[in-house]
Image: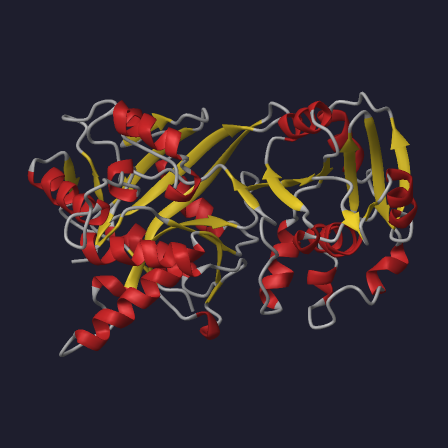
Length: 441
């Protein structure tokens, strides 16, 4: 099944870069242009220069952000700003973070080189759709740099926590690297070099499937890059560096694994149908076909509303949504018969049809509000408080608050050979880039 190997990690040299927090960054796809400039200005060797370089007005085919990333990578290696391990290793990676309610959690993962497998092999599974644009961008970076700068985030099933028990060998020892990122997440890294330990971990992970939590575009690009090099090579053993990709592996059963919801703001509301705007009372009446609708105190806080979405202790999981518009707030509970409604996609599994995001988009955003075809604009927000405040300050807008997607739902959809709808999962925290990198040469 899954094949992982130790590798010669490339890390910032602590004697030249004592402040690791100044040079790390989140994954490239969550960095805004403003934040990009902040990171570039923070330190001349910040990893953002490798993963998301700035574009210049005179860029061309030969001089561009990808070529500059490759130049800086090789220069930093030459200058010993970045240093490669002398021997292959695996890396234990802890992220300690605070939940919105204040609870502290630690998610433990393992940096490893994961053998690339096509989706159809069923060894590594996706859970989200990908788009061509990001893959074109990442391919240009692969070709120029010949390196893995950011890890893929993979999940494995280990109910007995055998792998995590093996990783506990680092407890009570000082980490090789530590940094607090801009979200307040404490990142710690330990290096495992002992051959017996490396062999044991490889053996423990071998019988398991890997579910990609984050990094689908980079994984598919790594596959394409491997195939491209294989076609160009006069010989190919399958053990070359590009046959593997830098990955952080986390137990699906880990108490430190957190999925946060992504809420939806719909703008404008109401939408126009047949030249006339739907009034809100009509919209509520239409909603009642699919949901029981309960009006709450319109001044309720986002935290209170999110609390109302959670099932009571011992109660079955039923799709429950929060809805806020202007000075009114509502609780929407799915009617059981709605799960067999003909509007739901017939070509999808029961697990896919029962997802909260599927039900919200099918019944409300697309059917009742007309979706994008009717001028309906959709904004995704992670902070419920900020989203609710934005809706209350505006006009004719509404926000739908969701529970986080459960891990069992992610697994069920992936095992059915399907992918989750857009913005269904937000695994928190994001993996930090800059702790460990890997050469493909």
